[in-house]
Amino acid sequence: MDEEILKGKTLLVVDDEADLRDILASELEFMGARVLQAENVTAAKLLLGQHQVDLIVSDIRMPGGSGIDLLEFVKSRNVNSPLILITGFADITTEDAFNKGAEALLHKPFKLEDLIKLVTRYTSPFDRRFNVDLSTQTLIQALDESAHLGRGGLSLPIDPQGKRIDVGDAVDFEVNVGPYHFTGSGICRWFRPASGSGRKSHVGVEFMNLDSHSRSSLQAFYSENLVVPYIPSATV
Image 1 (cartoon, rainbow, N blue to C red):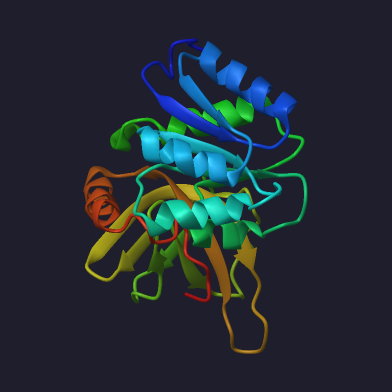
Image 2 (cartoon, rainbow, N blue to C red):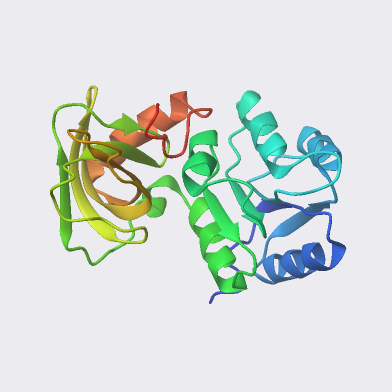
């Protein structure tokens, strides 16, 4: 991997475990990034007031405030800094993490290469962020405007009689959301099965590849909606 791929980026790593914080900072600095470190949410807020940060990596469980508190602080101030949450506990579901605005949720122990891939993607130019090739087998269609759009994906009901979609599956989609039409492929990040007769299952899909028209639509939506979910919950 190109060791200069994060050159020019300023990242903030927030974790009360100094050893883990140092490991993450060292790895990201090796990739060319400038890395700020904070041991708690209070210190992180101070740094965010002093520096322009391209991305935040934060643990969830910390004394004096959680990573979720930090996420809510960032979104409440309309700060355009993607935030990746990490945790060693069942603090939050993937669906809720995306609904609160996090770009990703990593569970400890995780591979450093997985974190680096996420950081690289979310600090890339907009066109490159949604230009990832996938091999897909399932097509999701929702042309009745029943989907909910987020900054990086969508949630939508699907026919419970159709093929089951599992977390991690790559899917193609063709979806209308209000005035926007999206065509592309993505990854299922959460799946909520139908809870009763006549009801539909819900799926949350992160955009990975969008055609040029869809990217333009998402960029217009994204620029005006920094505080909306990354992928909305099925309850939105």
